Image (cartoon, rainbow, N blue to C red):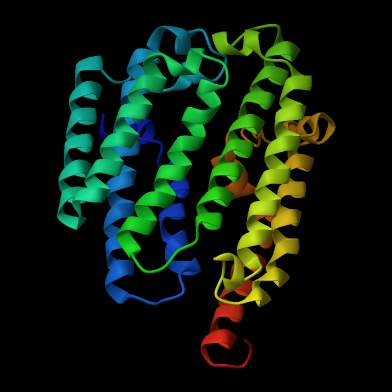
Length: 305
């Protein structure tokens, strides 16, 4: 039972919560207590997100049983009794909120807001076009805001805008892949997919990726635009473009079909799987991160201005 509960908590999804540490990386100042607060906030978000996944699986138990892959989830497969799943969910959510309250009232409020939005998503928003995409992206943006609140220090509004646009990009790619797989199999796995089309997703994707790139470019332009501490951060821009292009390549139908022949889990329908499995994405993120850290070290030691 414990093993099935842990599986239902979707530990792989915890990689999304690493976004909480981003404000510390991008901040102009260094605070050891800020990093400790981020660790606590990370734990809180892991707990509350796992609690929400349990609630989502309880709400979707009937539809999941008719889904080709979701039917294997422990709750849908009958491996966990609904009352045990619900009690576990309440425990995780309560523990998360208690931990967040020890950090600050603002973080407690942001996690409560995240809980409220996700419950609405599970009940209503996931069946409403556009609202479902914004609900998914709101989760990423709130993670970034929690990181900002936990770390403190100076931060840029361009940073938050970049996170917001990239979050929308991932949500659009997720729904686009779901729609393409539904059209291929002839089974509509989500009601909301009937309101979407692939040409619409392509237009949305084009708009969001352009906005994400411009927001990041403005942040990296330096302090004159209330961005990074030095305009040398512009040398990290190519890595952001490479990451976006790589993700679009993976989501391309021909490339996606080739990858799924090797591993059915390797799909942009599951962004966390892409982060864990794709070598190109991992190398791009590592190179970008090393570049950002190098620029910060050189700037703080007055080697660059």
